[in-house]
Length: 297
Image 1 (cartoon, rainbow, N blue to C red):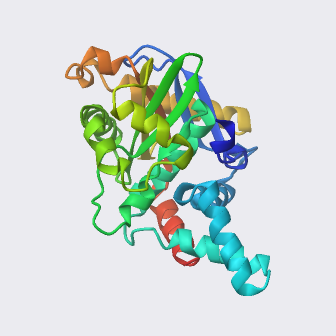
Image 2: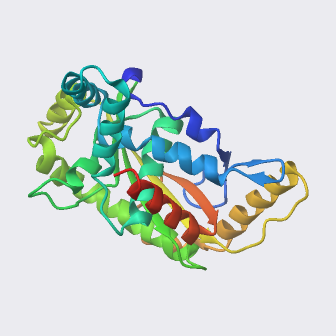
């Protein structure tokens, strides 16, 4: 299964993250994260650069990547630079113009599930988004991992809100979305099972699941909440700055209240894993993301 994972370490070098029980439901250690700092300098530029380099992995699996590169090498007489530039251009052409926040969040989620949960993509949603005859539908991410005797399916939802003071709305929308995702998963898998969207190495898993033959299935649910943060980051050192960021996330979670979770079925709620990702000046970051993606196509 490791061979199906793409490299995420360079991106995560530029993300500050920690596990913590934020006093929200379900009671477990969730993940707080944001763009990293080195001393008194934030690493936004490096974060964005590394995130963008993962786009080709998001769009194409390793088998298709190899096929595209090899075909281009034949056409160019072995020009490797041309072949890999062509691959990147093709991948970036799959992006929907004018939808930076959704694609930014989904790309981040794709990397986080691989890094934190070691689960490979079962279905690549970005290919579906640009496929003729297929509407955008269902989970933002569907990943899979074999863990002992369990066949673990990870369903992920990403909510990215660029407006100020939208943490609660992003969080509640994420909860609503993950409930819908669980409810509709069987229908979603049926929609794409026969459309060449499932990872080839995992087709047997998907078909066995759909046929009711896959044993010891366990669902894990991932909610990524990315939002524009307006609270000041305090501190004169890297340690103080990161403690300030932790405090901001803790306070946002404390402000939610129990009523956010009351409408969620307990069976679903206990499987949820949150990734809270505040971003300072999110609007500018999304503009830079869209500009750099567009400049490569």
